[in-house]
Length: 341
Image (cartoon, rainbow, N blue to C red; front, top):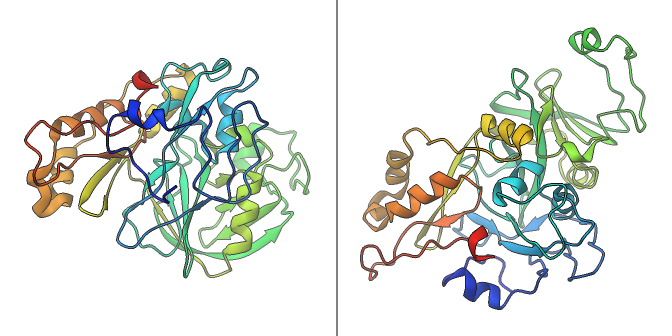
């Protein structure tokens, strides 16, 4: 199975060769076979071939009776919001036995320096660029409204296993029962590992509430699943560059093919939290941004495909360019959709 895979025909043809639960190509994160107990991921690897801007591959999972979307999200290194957005109409608490769940495990890389840690707030993901070797990507939770993580660049200035947590004065006013310092342990929201940033009061850390990953619930820090932060903690030394961006619309190439990867806005994510669904809003200036990014290839863009991707904003990379020989209107929407599961 290739490292990077997107369907080049219809979804039905793709699914003909896909088992109810697909073996994952992003080794070593093993996926469970149908009916088997899902394996706990060990490491989030996604290979980046030269000159390619898209990592991973789209996968399909057949839900078991006892599954929730939170269970599935953690098993496959996904956040809650991105999994719900990719599966409109699926009950997060009771997907149902045999329900086909689209796993958004392919990602266009953010437009940012490919060095150290890059956090994209819109897709709630960390991208780790090692000095050599494949990119690793991790689902995260981010700051709630009014307490967002700042955009910009900083570095890791300190690392700590079993960190203590010092609630801010504002947090203690909200909850006067909190102690001045919370020791390591199950009640500590920092989890077992912390990477402290050059921005005071901000850190990349674990969590004692894994269901919060993929949600806007923090006071500005960036949370990872316990197994995710343990992995990143071992890889990222003090001094590592950390870049935070907020890109709802990502664009990138695989060879001569241009892809867009459009995510829910942060207000859309809040709507997902409260309603279980969201009404995607247009992305300001998207057409001009896509045309500029495409450059000389702008004449090959299928704008109907771009508009469909914008209407959905489901975080699924979509190929939007025709081949040079394809007539206008001939490009199928090359994406996995709920209607064809």
